[in-house]
Length: 600
Image (cartoon, rainbow, N blue to C red; front, side, top):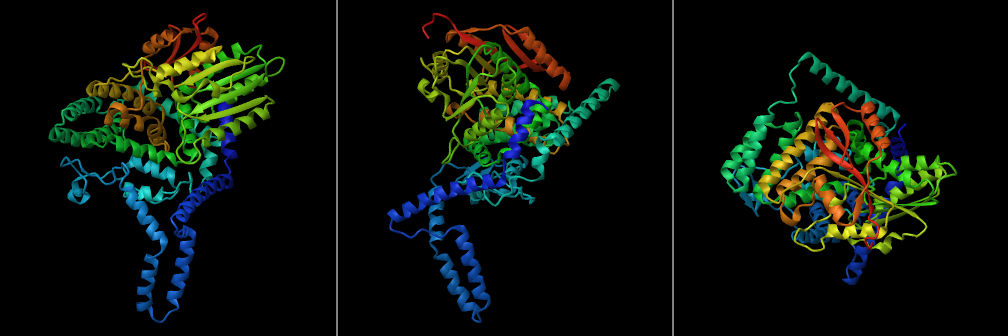
């Protein structure tokens, strides 16, 4: 089994439900302790917990059923229930929520182009009040294992269900039969066979001249989307809504690639037209916070089975690391994008086989802090699993996780020692750091200076090959062009009927599209650049680009040829290892080192 898949399998097997529930209960207990402290300061009695309320309610029902004076007693008891401190507490929460920047108090009638602070003013028979669409149903399904249809739930209902601080509700099943099907051998084989079968079907259709259904109404939808963006840009509400109606009639979240993309872009354009783009994007992000890791693992598993990009990055990075670590006694990897740690099991295995024994491996990771009381919860869990994995291969291992934004990190926090070979690994993370053009020392420049201070033996960087303009119309065309390729890529490699087909779209694509189309200025989160731009910027920052090793290129090409669609391609050009689809370069990975005598 591939080391990455083997690691993920162990990851899932270690996710015991009792451990997760205990963790969630501890989080909630900590929150309750804080609440009690505030009530004591106010000289008030702490309201009963939900379980205590349920017990009281059950007792009350029992008393009512045994009473002969139902009418009078029910009236009294209703008064008693309404006077419970819990009711006052929740009322206070509701009052406080009014001051939060949410869109649930906006009644949005896109049909009539009305945005109202009073939802009652909006004619909802022709409107959207940001109820759950099918994409929203996806997140709701991830949040709860309930089989009930949640398409009628609005965001208010969702917030009430997610008002607890604990990351995962203790009464929700976390591990079930799907866990075993995700990334273990049987599920893996099934997905691989499904993708290979789909590929053969498409190849047969190409040879026999069967019309490509994937093309569908591409040109017409493309034209409508561009025209709609122009109307939205000048705030021509009537024209924009007319075009949006046409787009809705021809798009579908379950259709072919362009139809699915058009459905997402229509949502983004509507939100921008209504002036609620950032609120809508914030809701999407908020929904993802409480989703169990199992769904992100399923997403990753499907993505690497259909798309080779991640495995090629890992292969390129780890082979370069091994080349500079041949005689090292201590190896220190600083990872600015560890996520779930999927890259490092294959490196650990390779180090265990080194002649003379493996070096001591230190991994220091920096990841965005998570909301709540435990900002480092995920990266701490990654460290424990990597520790166990290293122990199983007898590789000396040390781990440190830092929950912080990259521009806030100081060199002292990384604890770099003089006797270590230092490796800097940064996969798709620099694009998330702001780069103000007019600033003399932008956050992105600060991060590059920090990397130079580390004096790494090698600095490995992977980035997408795209750039977004600050002008909306230009940016919209760039987004449409870029994601047309990505949706076509998935549509051509993953069967449309696969039950998990929407996972990669909703995790990797939808939030970025919504943010890039519906938001502006400082609310734009992603700042991608072309590979040529990155090359010029990092050279100016005092780095020297290293040539691509031909043996690594050959290994990566073999990996793609043996396991993926032949329309993916790998090539090396100008010291980049490039990856793409149908002739278009989508991503690149390269290696750097600080220039000598440059004062770093």
